Image 1 (cartoon, rainbow, N blue to C red):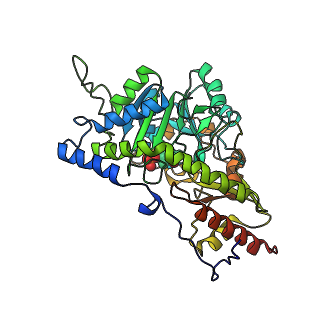
Image 2: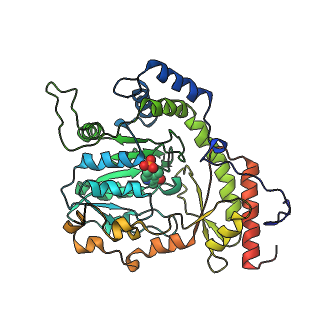
Image 3: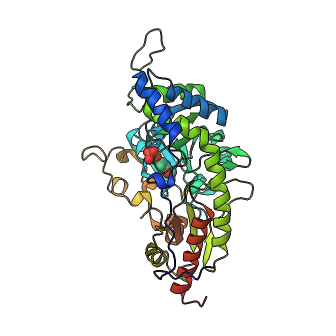
Length: 412
Ligand SMILES: *Cc1c(COP(=O)(O)O)cnc(C)c1O
């Protein structure tokens, strides 16, 4: 213990940030690949080899189905929904505690996002909360592995498969996490990953889709390329689709990053194990529940604050004084309270596709989302990345311990 005082004179450790070079591992191998692409003059994946190499590299790790590189995690979700091809007004069950990029593609495909409550202990949807929202119109379920902690996707697959409902795993925050020995992203029908600036593996912007069924994989691949069936004897634009292709520049960085992904994940695992054990020992702070049979791949470090002792907001304010940007609530409000959903701001003034929805599908009453409310009210999310070293972990843990003691009035 260094006798740190918050805002006092003790040494403040500057934390690496995944928003700049300090928290990322970008260097010679990325540059060499980028030079190769520039010198080839082939910047599009329709001409070059980087993106297809990235797809095979990721395929080799996960060993299942097809891999389709996309321009973002959002577009990978979009391609999965387009591959399911819901009828307008069909329903996709999803989580209210996620990135909006996992929700808006549902609406673009004319389907209705129907929100399942999350566990107050994990922030993840459960088989029971998903079962509660399934209707004859449900065509898919998006399961977000929040913060890299696997959701019970196997149980959700058992629920959905007999009903013909597709399961999309959103692994944007969970690269290489394992559920009962199996990589997340390979358990459902689709696995989606983001390679955005702040994710485990970065290409600035980018996304990866794993698709198990060959027919759906083909549809998804067409979708990200304007549905142009260039490999057909009589090629055509087969259906309504966008351009969501990844560029060779992204692919080049992705290949260099992929070679280091296992090291990144191992290092995160080591640092997060100590981080979590130390914060769990602080009175008033608990780690989120993780199934002992799973291996989480922590993206950020969420903790649950005992609100009887101190508020996550007060803690965050105290921590910000020493440069620790802990985020209370993770997202300010459940996704269904954002204007796009709450006010149905979609196409012109039509409110479409919400106009096609069953009224119960649009019931966002707080009483239906008690787990969500409790989780968001008590969670405090710590930044974390592959450049964290023991000194960063112990600094964060020490200042958190001090902040809890200061606020709760406990004597150290
Ligand atoms: C980052 C993220 C996305 C969206 O990915 P983008 O690459 O930013 O489009 C979707 N879902 C979750 C859970 C994410 O964390």
